[in-house]
Image (cartoon, rainbow, N blue to C red; front, side, top):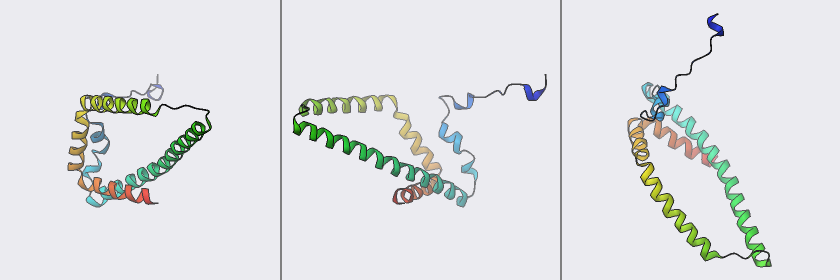
Length: 136
């Protein structure tokens, strides 16, 4: 059997839980020059900002339209909404999510802080690009 017919073996051991995936992705970028790090950060930030702006507009329009239609339906008598019950449910969900997040993901914030502290130029370029992407 020829080597070209052999199945490709994918090594997924580099993406185990004990390794930081963000560092694996950007490990080669951190060895580049300052200018290249800034450009890579700026371009990726700009793309993320553009995507965030587009998705944010659609999400805001969807939520706003839904709330407007719900208010009109309530005013016309089609729907009866118990707003105090909804508010209590929202508060309970908020507390539950905050508690679970602090318990399950305390290392995420520390990992992100460490990454940005070690890659200042990449992070600065990303932040600037993100703001440019939001504004365009």
